Image 1 (cartoon, chains in turn red, orange):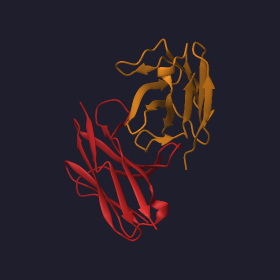
Image 2 (cartoon, chains in turn blue, green):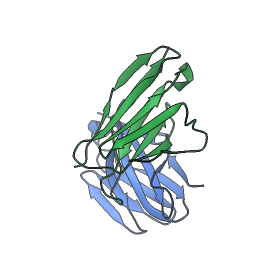
Image 3 (cartoon, each protein chain N blue to C red):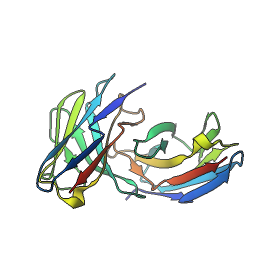
Image 4 (cartoon, chains in turn green, orange):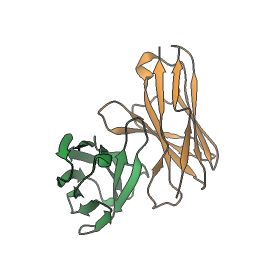
Length: 111
Length: 115
């Protein structure tokens, strides 16, 4: 069974204080690992897809990296508007097309 | 980019009634759409995969007679919660992708409250 574990569950940072969110996964063949951002009362918003170990993707203050067992979402010099829940999800190869999600990391950036 | 529209955003209904939620892909065709359910501080749980022109595929533990899914066209899937009860109160989110290996794009969800 595919599993995704995210840590920490919640993280409070000061504006400008960089940090990393972790996503550990077990999957029977990885087709893709996805990062989403979810604001309260909204659907998830796509951020990144990573396909193979060693791959990195960047967007503004966010950078996602991937190894064979985990992914990190690095947040550099965050701003209050980066406050959200960040979700990690995996898609297995050879299986259904749906995603398996972690519980997310609730990130709060204080001004 | 791919846009998925979901309606309504909120609905309150009485116990025993049925509620229909619509999910549309606005600028692409989706042969497959996915319905998720989310509880507070929990993961998004895949309920079912909606296939255009054929029956939906339900995840283990999801009652197909309670959660009716219809995918009548390449841009529209509907989820009907039949004979709703308070325990069905939740946040329901649909998603779709335009190409097989492209990321899933999500609607903004429907907050269902059953009184």
